Length: 281
Image 1 (spheres, rainbow, N blue to C red):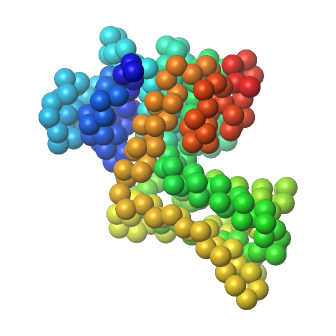
Image 2: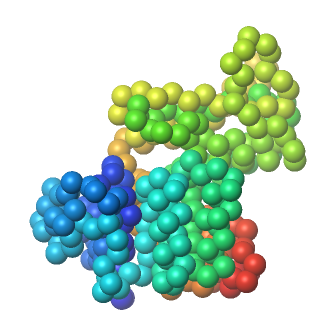
């Protein structure tokens, strides 16, 4: 089987560091480039040494080396930086996996537009277990219907910049869609008034070094159902991102999701909205 050459954008972040470590251990993968912002103090140094493993022969760089030979680029950075690298991938015909969160609607639309030209996978959470949780939440919402009050509680490390998390927002979207079309999805109001019927409450906690916890609570009269995922470290997210990169390599242009990865689709995207002009079906 041909090796997949992967570039990591946001290489010195928590996720980028773990991705590089795991790529070095995987015989099916090769690190093609490690990218960080211009002005980073460690530019030019071998990324293997920087992440605490043997040298990899790849220097930390602000831009993609001309001879990198990238099959897929994985982005864990910030929205503005992710859009910049998405434009490069579009122009170069390189597949793109985006784990960055915090896009506003205009940024999200701009990001999705590159799927007309390249295979693009966007997911607020790359963990296989979290994506299974999303399916279970949708099923529970459909079965329990409007008889349940739905609340989502998420915890992340104190330095996470967006709140609620992209995963919590996605869980709220799934739960609300499962209960009834057009169901209001909102954060829990900060005032003492009773939360309006039809809302999904979201509570974001930022504590210490928590890599991520999500609990969806379905409150019924006389009983409660809770569906939870707790990350013990970042490996589940990182391994899921690498699964996504391997899945995306060689795929036709279109917008893909982790649902497609879990389904093992060999064609265009089956679990996400296709882009006009793409090979999706």
